[in-house]
Image 1 (cartoon, helix red, strand yellow):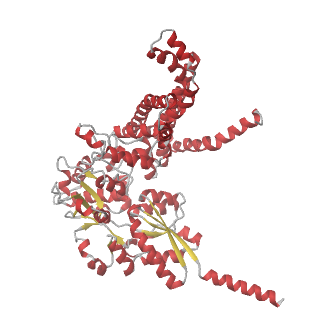
Image 2 (cartoon, rainbow over the protein chains, first blue to last red):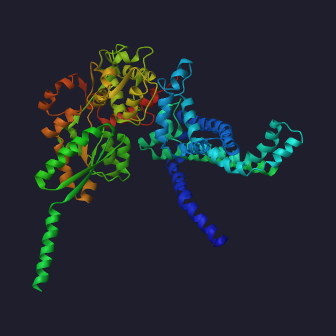
Length: 265
Length: 335
């Protein structure tokens, strides 16, 4: 490597060009409205409902992925079985699939004439075209983030500590809770944070299954598109800035939590 | 020396000869349901242009929601002509980007709309809800599928058609129209972002009992494999005259040097040949002769115009669809 000065300089340049300058353009835009205009824009009930849905559904989807993604990663790292490589490759599919295709496939499955939606409908459960539909789509697109961040760390995990724990008389659950989980927690948090961040911004797959009813199943990115359609660039940017800030605070908090967890180890 | 001059001249002649048999490219930026229509139109126009001038013209198409296309042109999409779902979207290009004069609609016959359409009901075969007219759409328990007027041009026409019916019905007024439209949207379980999305929701996902649809989209749904066994079209007692306009984007054709061919392309839409193609794609042709020949496809129902009921697009947009407009006020789902 060419040394610290040069590489830091390049890092700053690269981050500015790719991330900071577009974000700065976004942050400058809404102030055309003035502070009060900005405030009225983002406190409309419809905007608040959309923000609640977007962040709420993303948080729930990320939590679901943190549990089940963990199990998938565990199985893929710890066990050998026929077809393992195939399943391993399947995990990446949500990355590769165009999000619109995912959305159409999911809505076809979960609509009340679909394979999953049909039986559920008879049981009185509706998924497609409700906020639950949003969650299903977000679980789908977030899953690989958890699995792929956990896998390498899990593979490097030495079994000696587990064996030590067992010889000292711990039950399997105690070993899991007190030995394995603390070692994996920082990585699990990273993966969950990534799944969450991805879910908040997701548009393509969600609009096909959400129903898009204002106040009920309208996600924030759709609201931004609607604002753009009204040539309300400043209003769209205002909502964008709020999303950005909330996401940033969430991620910062998760990072802090992660640092705290690793320091406690 | 002579040889050099001769060669130069020969070369010059050659280049000018090739320049004469030019290849021209046009970009037509259009809305969602016109894919099939313009595929046929473009072929016919290219053949005619070749015969007339010897030039090869290739027409590239771009399709998306009408509002999104308008925004794309404003933001720099290099359209030679715009063929959108409603006049307001072209007005926006004239107002915001000043790429064409404000009175663009006066430059071609019939307010620059070579073909029209209307809003009809698509229902499931046998019409189980016995839907005949607008009031049937607010029967208790019925579900109506229509896209979001904020993002879809066709949905704006649907909304205005429902409003026009209620305002012009005997004893109707603006307040009653607002109440009717508000009630109608309470029966909408899914708001798709575009006309094609709504058709898919209704036809493939089995959501809803009635689809408010462009007349041409409804016919297309019937033409699809098995469509005629599953759906039927219901014409209400009246609807709206939907006028999807076309316009030359002056600044862009000026820069490309394509004004002549772009103008000819738009005028071609009014010729008998083109009107025939439009009618075959279920757009109502302006030519009375062609319309009559295809009369079976286009039942004659009273159609209100946007100028009569709403005072033009600019006003309709401001009152109904702008931020905080009537649509935002009446749209309170979950109540």
